[in-house]
Picture (cartoon, rainbow, N blue to C red):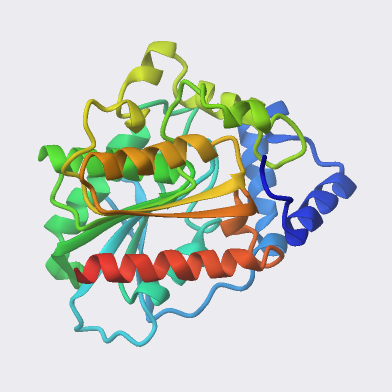
Length: 313
């Protein structure tokens, strides 16, 4: 049985109820994107200052944003996190996750290359995988011009972004991407079959419930056979051994909770150094609600410390 929701999370639920806004899974994807983006000034505090935030493009045209942490100098060669935002592979962008990306950069003392990967349903699986992979290659190839150390790269993201980061870590293990030092998986989706028990616990009353996750999954991976592909469901990879050391965050009120914890357990069983941090009274999405859900600020700080140590190792 999950711990009671934190009072700050209850405040969010009360706000949503009072607003009368429809659930994402009942909307057209373009409308869901607009509604999600409109919540940013309400749910997130002002983004912290960084030394630099520069908009760039990958060779395939996908937008990325390079952050350099506060206090860093232009000539510093920094480790780098390639960051993939959450949003169910359907919404979210560089701006909706600007606060989180900046906070990780400052907290970890590293550069962050955030990726505005292509989204479903216009671009289904594996388009997002390909874009995050291209961003990792770009960071390694252009390291000198970006002021980053190609030997100290990490991948990370929240929710759908955690899924894409886990997949990138497997690709790096297999040699199809440059080597990685760390993977930062923040309440990640790891199994598209949606068969873990936590899907039965959370079916109503939260920002993300089982039905919403099914909506996201079906837009991103419309063919059920794709759910078994490790590039969509990294928990179903034959082996996780040899992937980069990991930090995995799970939250108690989340249909993805059990698959995230299972992923961390498999990493440990298969010899990968892993830290699992479980916030029992927090709900999915809290990292981008931290103007109201104050414990999320501590969770971001905790993740940033783990990233700092992982990139230093």
